[in-house]
Amino acid sequence: MGESTMDKNQQAISLMKENKYQEAAALFNEVIEQNPGDPTGYINFGNLLLQLNETERAKRFFEKAIDLDENAATAYYALGNLYFDKELFSNAQQYFKQAIENGLEESDAYFMLGMSFKNDEQIKFSLPYLLRATELSNNDETILFQYGLALAQLEYLEEAEKTFHQVLKLNEDHSDAYYNLGVISLFHDNADEAMSYFEQALEIQPDHVLAANGKKTVLAFLEDQE
Image (cartoon, rainbow, N blue to C red; front, side, top):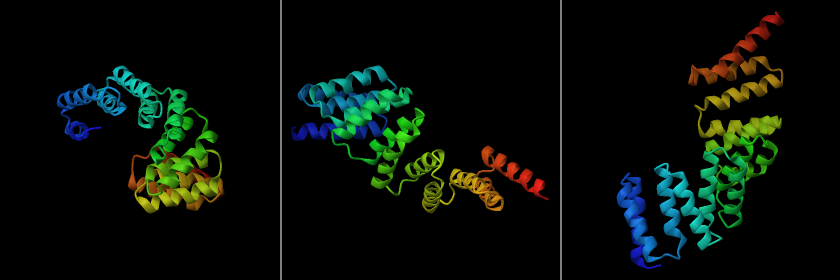
């Protein structure tokens, strides 16, 4: 790949970040014309089309990239995201798996594969991928929180509790982490601790409906005890 092509790709990506889509498209077009056998231009153009919500056209560009190079991991990843956004989770799973198999050993790929299973209500299958994502990116509160949720849904409460505390170390204002710790405390019949967590969630986010309901549940329970 010639120096000028690399430069054009970089230039076009910069233009995309500045929302100058037409100029970026013209450059990507030149890249494709100069290197019709290289998948990179097609992948970049596909990402541009996604930004413009031209999903069907984007899909064709990613598929063309895979035709040119069946190991084009980022094209598989892009198609995974495309199907994920359409809520076609089993399609998304296939593409994220192929992205990983073709060398995209990144936390985002494992995270999205895990979320594809989770959103498809196959939480047990999501767990190893979400775990791997946390290992590759242990300071990402979104990944940690979703891993904690999956653990909690599968009733691995001790691990879930540890994970939500890790989330709070990264972001002490994570109201959903406090809420979920409150729910776990209720499972352990620790009403006072649950109340404390629900109140912390509400302090951060006064309109946290679930935490408000949790607090009501605890209050009703405590009144019954009197």
